[in-house]
Length: 275
Image 1: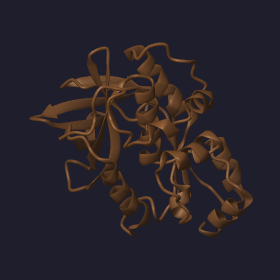
Image 2: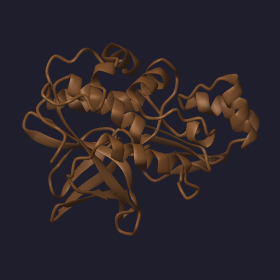
Image 3: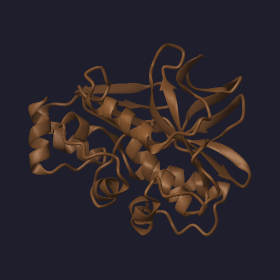
């Protein structure tokens, strides 16, 4: 049994009433949406990615307050902060439902060609009768939704992503040179809120999680990908050119601000202590 029905008829498992829609539109700089169209979905997704960074600093500092909408509102909409997949997708999925879209909340298996766990949250959104993979919380990878169509290839700010259906197991890949690199795989089983609470606990606390031991901040815009992973800032362009710079502790505040993350003095001091 799934948990999603037509907008307005489901229980508020996702705390939709707590979504600060006006604050969200102000944070992303997006105008009011008159109807849940495919064009509006595309522009909302791109506005979100360009305005709100992917980052895991609360996880690194051991101060993550959870993935309730009220917490996300305070962190992302009232501060110059971002979040990782659960925060982005909880917020964006709620915004889309408030705007009248049909939203299915799913989970993906990272490194689907190997043995990664189901820990990534993404959405499939229906607009004007078409389903779209909508993922604004996978770091510097996706600017716009991808039609849920086997074999479709979509430009994402200069980088190509491909979606394939293998008997109900969908695989998302990214073109790297002449090869396709698998990003993740997923089915269309809708998930409950508790599934994300469990996954969030693992990702934010387990020593084998890729987010507990190093800082990760990512931004994507057309023609430019920026990624701070650990102490290394990598700036990449679609033609494959990239530069990597080691970020010293004294340059950390400036680097984070350039990536759209503003920490309090105590947070900055705590993060520098991990450097």
